[in-house]
Image (cartoon, rainbow, N blue to C red):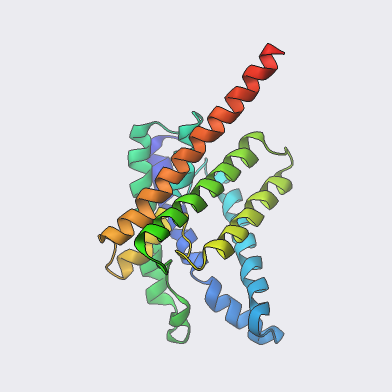
Length: 236
């Protein structure tokens, strides 16, 4: 796929990702009401919807030539040498941010007023330093697991998806009391833009700088670990 088409694909899939994931809250309430589900059991509906969206969007991303809705993902693969150049990243990441912001604006306008309370992005629930460390660590783990699953994990596509989905859900639970969490700067930017907080130091530090550094660190550790493994095999 040409770079222009990939940039447009990134923007489009980022738009759809934010738009669709923002419907999870409303969809959960509707499903829970119809099924008579109450209390903490609603979380099973949430996690099921998250898993479904990851499966659908992963397939969609492959179908349109490797598009992505997460800057940490494209940075991680670039860091291990199987992704984009720095120049291409400088084009793709802004496209993902713009597409995500457009998705948030669209769903905010279209969501019925009775469900608008379910909308919103990640928010900092601790002090700035703790939040930055948490978001960086979560992004590191997520990026490393994705790299391993895609490049070194099982060949079975269902198992790959299962590993990524289970890790995503586990990290969402772990990070819920710290930063939301986001683990996706473009998604965090989308709702920060809606709330006019996208240019604050808090947003830039917690939801852009540390996740990208965490992703880059994951790619470096992954590359080092498996390079060492290859060297040992050659020596043997």
